[in-house]
Length: 244
Image (cartoon, rainbow, N blue to C red; front, side, top):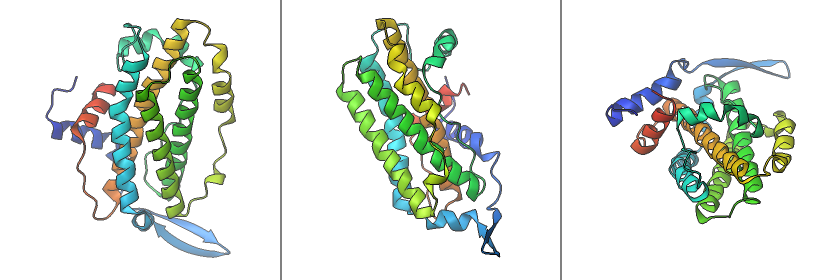
């Protein structure tokens, strides 16, 4: 539990990404034999700040709504969101749930392109997982709201990819994860396994959403004329989840 002030917690969250950030760097891009310098600051300034703010707001909503969906779905009192002891106890079952992509720290144009593409993949993965689990558990309002927010965030990130001129087709689909999601129903044969799969999916979604939040803090940090105000509730949640 973080006992620091909100500003100190926020500083910790920033520090978790800022250690790898260098001043706006340039990469060389060769096109038809012409070499041009392309600083990441120029690419970031192309992005619509309103779209960035919308995406940032949705990440916060998702982080606030994951616990609500967990409370609506999980009736096993032994499955507590964010409990590291339970994480260790269920570690042997993690192979049931495909892992989310690990988001790169954004330091240049290439890493930003990869990071946005992995955000889209990760959000789609969790949508697919929720849709599979819904076949076994009641479709609650809380889960439906969460799904809608994930879909909207995915659309906004795809919009940012388009604004930046990135080509999503360059990043191959994760066929292995798609197969694992498709086969998930084979493991959901008991009430306990259904509850565990739902818990692990929501826990992983919470962790992944914290990574998305950190990435957007990096984008905001490097984008001209953007405020750094942050929701203290979600900052606290991510700090606690990271065990800081």
